[in-house]
Image 1 (cartoon, one colour):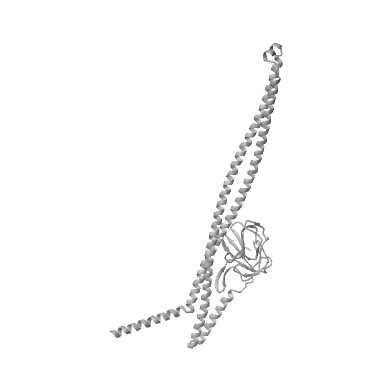
Image 2: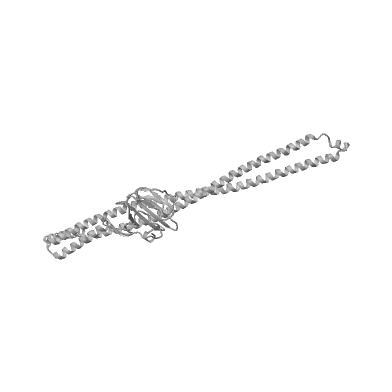
Length: 399
């Protein structure tokens, strides 16, 4: 019985060792690392899709901020116009009040003077036989008083009309000021939202960098595993010719992937709807779409135009600058976003210098920046994007 237990124990230990050995061997195989690399690439692509979605949202929010800036400017201009009108009305009312005071003074002076000129009573006039003259004098006084009173009433009515208009203008001014405050508050909310989205984008970009680093690491381990497996096949002298051809095929494919990250595509500019954004060069060094970069399959959201450092970058179409930022900016480096209306925006990345700022209106062909190699860049070039309602699209369809 004891011998049986010992035998079973040995068998179990051997099975565990074999199982662990097989697992270790499987985890060190080229297929294992290839699967891990594909998993990392898939994760990076999913993360890139999330980043693209966030960039679309950021574009929309920035466009909303630009629209709010325009509305705020219009409100402030209207408030300024209404303020000027209020000041004009206050001045007119002051002049009418002065005129009214003068006319009342004239009337009072006339009445006092006429009163002081009276030398006799009504009874004296009757006894002296000068009744007709007395009546005539009284009639003149009444006419003068009526005339002056009429002038005073006209001035008072005009003053009241001016005051009513002033009240209406002040009410309209108050409404515009409240509207401006509401727009300012909404703008602050939108800017906060853009900042939050940008922070979220930074987190995803950090995650994307990790996935890409993993993919590169697994690519290295895969090549090492392939080399080990090839060495084992040679040592065992099994299927030498087949193994050699397979090894060469693998190496050839592997080399092709490496070259994919550095090859250049010559696609000359042939003209289209938007203007060419880099007048000094028409060479597209990296087209729109999937590419192999540093051993990782990646989606390129624009086109790269190779050009010398400092070359002019121009606006592809007239529009409003909704973003002009210096820094890393998620790999874009120093870059500009221009809104052209109807949901179309263009991006100009990796610049060495920016010549415009957010909120500025630019015209087609205007110089807005200089070619550089800031951000995630390996050499001087312009990364140019066209986005429709926040979603990237092939720029060549617009150029």
